[in-house]
Image (cartoon, rainbow, N blue to C red; front, top):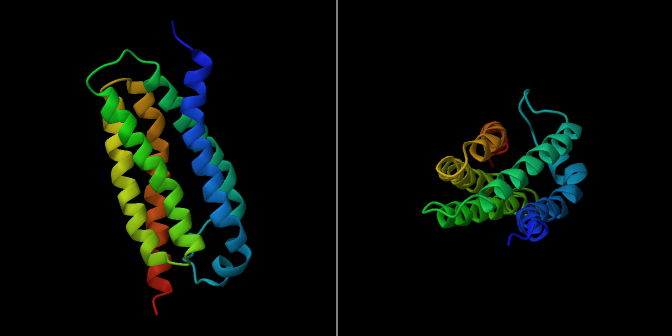
Length: 158
């Protein structure tokens, strides 16, 4: 017998934890350190990041839920492990870039995150194609964020 409530909790907790940890690292540094950085002309306004991440986190949690509730298969363990790796890297980026004041380290972290998301989307595709498709906007946003991180690193090289 399936316990849907438990499956929802298991799907939401890692995503919510990454969002919370990311916010703890990010928010105090936006008006201070981040405001002092040189940024490229395509840098979006700060207010846009929250709503975009809220939608992306909801999509991630739902995608993870779909994988967790699918029929157990040979890809399931791989998909779960990859998802947990990428969500940990998601939170780690905020700590490296914002809390650590380290754009170069953030760039390394976000590149690892990009690879982990791509591998997660591939593994999800083997299980549930909708779950995989739910990760594509996330991969697109992280691609943009990586380019932004690259430019901030370049513009603020010491």
